[in-house]
Image 1 (cartoon, rainbow, N blue to C red):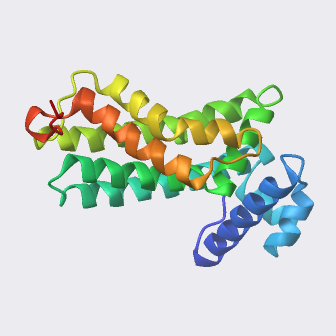
Image 2: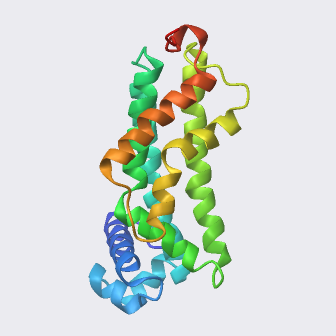
Length: 212
């Protein structure tokens, strides 16, 4: 039976925090003994909370992705107060890029990729709690702008992939080889990406007029 109560929850969070740090620095081969030591608990306590390293890693990924979900919820609230579609999308894109380029999240993503052959279920867990949820969140945010007449999107699923492709995916590609895009290029990708997105999906009244 999984331990319950405030003390048990503190231990659980300490275990997850230690595991996240060690998975990022040591890889998936980080031992449960080391995780327990870093968390200040016994190995038995770790296994009382998590039946396997795979289960613990799934929780680490889930919490990291939960942070991204919270960020998106905050962004949707802010978008509701923004009348200008361009301003809204620029703010959204910059925040998503900042979240996507967080070193620990990039490291977890790369770790999942590296371990897919040994543990394919980790990839499924990451996809479900990470990219799939982020895509759903972005779709809802774009839907909010559509309902307010700021965007006109017939196929939201395609629009989500296109928005990610224009703003976030270049960072993820660079991150897979331990690199990062220069700050000035990252900003140009955001601004030009939003312009391209608006050229396709901006409501007629919200599109920038093109000089003759």
